[in-house]
Image 1: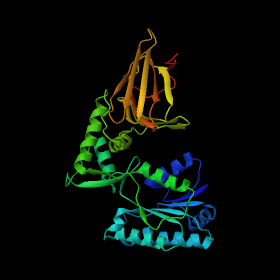
Image 2: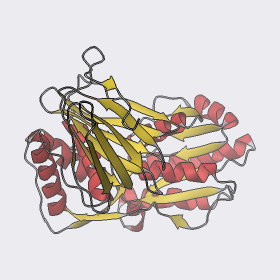
Image 3: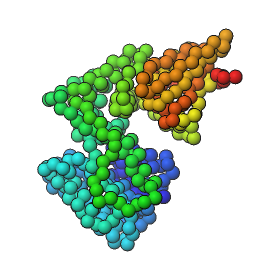
Image 4: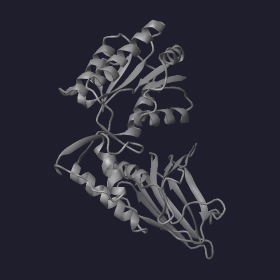
Length: 366
């Protein structure tokens, strides 16, 4: 299936394109560096369009209307010229409810889409957070993450001011679920991505300072009380990352494994996802230290001493999480024993090196 993504080089666009490609979609990427002729060519082949392109920090007010209203009109007109009734998702903003130029330009784009008779899905997004968001631009979350990670000051005018948030990966999953649905009739209603998180600016800053302190303590992972804190922690790790390291993502029929943070001094943090019934592991380390911390779902962690076969078994639940120390010379495994995908934050004291890996295969249950 061919998917055209406008604004493909932006914060949300990068996440959308990557996830689409992981799911075997063919992606046409359109952004400011592409020509209108290229856009026309993409439209001829596209089976679905995700329209993310827009302007939110222009030099002149007129640019709001050029980037948000007029480009949306152009896109619709080109679709109609092609003679194809292509379904389209548009990312709008909650600002469309407000009387400012950015909001008015987004609202005008929404209205033109709704009057186009195309099958459209218009999503008004709240403040979007997640890795790769540009700091010191238009996101308080990204700015706080970057400044706190780099020991720079942050400014909070009102600690009690509550902000509503959408997580970028939730947005991507919602868009893909629409594409995968059999019914592409569109919606005349304005749509919203759920969950919507609420957090005061003061609480947001406090959480990020706490994350940094726990990571720098080397032995600890932060205690995460809910999915918002888990997603915020994953986001914060991206701003701590040392640039010379690459971050791997692996996905198969068991789940996925995503590296979040690497440091020669503090080790490595990763997010391990396992589907229900899946067991991962079956190895031991001679000197590396690990901590497992299931924050979503229910896991059983079994360790066996390879010397005397002593067994340690822990059942952990994201609703009442606890840290589990993985002991050197104990071969270990983790099994999803619940009904939903588990997310387990894993800290290990040393960055993985294929030459000096200190990882040895040994079945846990013989």
